[in-house]
Image 1 (cartoon, rainbow, N blue to C red):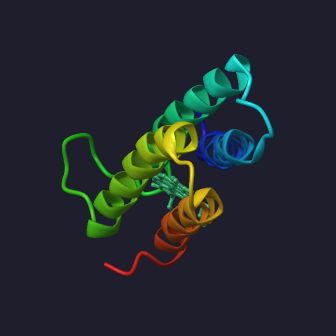
Image 2: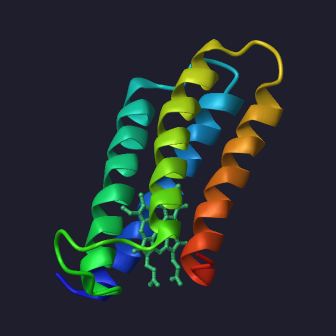
Length: 118
Ligand code: HEM
């Protein structure tokens, strides 16, 4: 697979993931099961495409050491993947703040990719 393939997949998966989280938080009723499944698959594809980009865009060898910002991105990814669905299901108060918090966290992951600050 090419760098372009992984880059577009990374973006598309982010769009599907955040839309799904939005639907889970904002819907008047519980999100349909298919939305939850699509959100989970999208999260997985963010990771898979991210790994593809590490190999193709950054050309880092398998087993080589990674720049710090990649660890930060994976931490953010794990946080939004776990917190998104759990908070959407359990929170009664502060749902709007939690949702935008997740969007801000995801935005930080994009910032880290573009600037590679550490
Ligand atoms: C919430 C999760 C994430 C979001 C919102 C996100 C967002 C983005 C965006 C917008 C870009 C494109 C930057 C550009 O085209 O210049 C990007 C690139 C990238 N992402 Fe992610 N990402 C996430 C998670 C991950 C994860 C988990 C990994 C690693 C497994 C990863 C690895 C990468 C890599 C290697 C690049 C390419 C950097 C480059 O071309 O210099 N991302 N990410």
